[in-house]
Length: 121
Image (cartoon, rainbow, N blue to C red; front, side):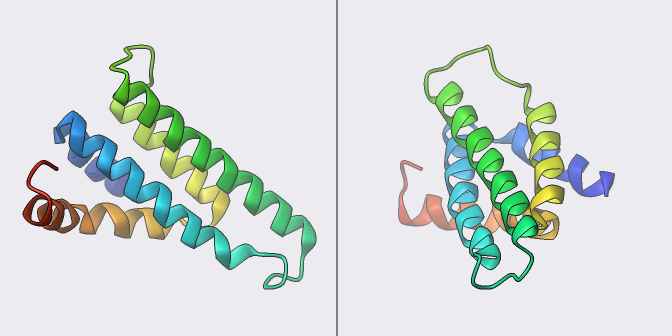
């Protein structure tokens, strides 16, 4: 597990500010898709639904908070490595840990696509 985290930390750390924001926006979008798997009509255990959706809310909070800090060039934010570790910790609670692993594995191709289709990205 720590290999996945270390790899994601290395990838994120090397990104420009603009690509970090783009990455977090894409991840926030993906998280909304992952959360749909836990809608009440799909999961019988209501306490699991509540716990998973609470964890997804925390994930969205961390993503949006970090994006705001980056956009306003604020220094009072988690260091990149700590922030990525927090994301992996939260995705364990959401049940989407492997989704986060897959996201970081495909991130280089997502960024290449974004740079080709939107040169300012």
